[in-house]
Image (cartoon, rainbow, N blue to C red; front, side):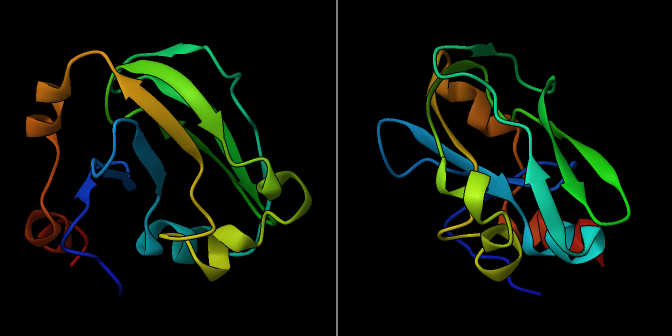
Length: 125
């Protein structure tokens, strides 16, 4: 299972990359493997406010639908529009081209509530 060290994680299997002004959000390798073939991602709107721990959308696989939860509070600044045509990128490259949204954080200290790669690894094993 691929769990990059540079990312932070939620117990709901989202990852967050704090390397820029905006935080990039996606689902983990574990999550996409559990979901199976992803066929649809319900996009939030740019400018929407999200709250840490509250659903911001849904991801649909062939056999199931799963809610997505915001790892931090803030404003959505970008969505990965390429997933509209090719949602399978989430399965193929969940930490790269399969990212979901970018959030401008309201309170960057919320990242202290997230899991490290070691903590996330322990959670799923």
